[in-house]
Amino acid sequence: MSTPTDVRRQLHLPGQAAVAEGPHDLSGMYVMHHAFRRDLGRFATAVRRTPLDDVAAWRALSARWHRFASVLHHHHTIEDTALWPVLLASVDAAGDPAARATLEAMAAEHELIDPLLESCATGFTAMAYAPDAAARDRLAGRVDAAFGEGGRAFRVLLRLTRGRFERAERAAFRHA
Figure 1: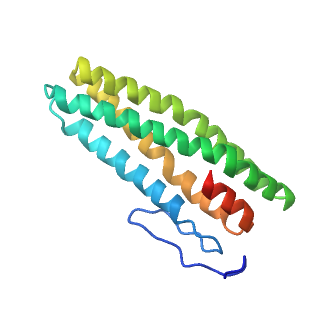
Figure 2 (figure 1 turned 120 degrees about the horizontal axis):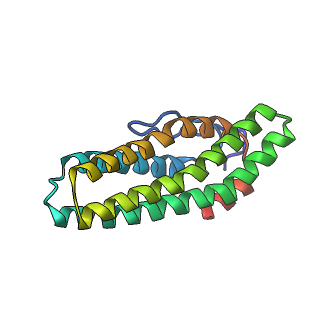
C-alpha cells in the first residue's frame, strides 16, 4: 500500500506537455488529455482534407464533433466541480496567491472553451448541409483555436496538482 509521500512513476504519452511526479496515479487525466489533443489534431486535418462535395464525410465529421464536444464539456464540468475547489482550497491553505490567480485564469479559460466548441459545432453542421470553401476556412480556424487552448493549461494544471490531493480527494475526483 502506498502512502501520500510515495512517488509513482507517471504515464508519459506522445505529445504530452509534462509529467507531474507524485503519489497519485494521474493516468486517467493523461489519457483524456491525450485523446482530446489527438482528436483535435485529427479534426483539424480532416477539415482541411475533406473534399467540399463529400457530404457523407462532412455529416460524419459533424456527428463526431458533437460527440467529442459533449465528452469534452463533461470533462471540463468535472474539473470545474471536483478539481478546482480542491485546488483552490489547497493553494489558499498554502497562502499561494500566485497559484490562486493562475487557477482563476484557467477557470476563465474554461468559460471560453464552450463557446468555441459551439462555434465549431455550428461550422461542422454548416459544412454537413451547405459546404463551401469560406465556411471550411472559418471552421479550420476555429478548430485550430480549440486545439491551441489545451497545452499551456495542462502544464500549469500538472504543476498545481502535484502533491495537492489527499487520498480521499483523489478518490472522489476519480469517481466523479
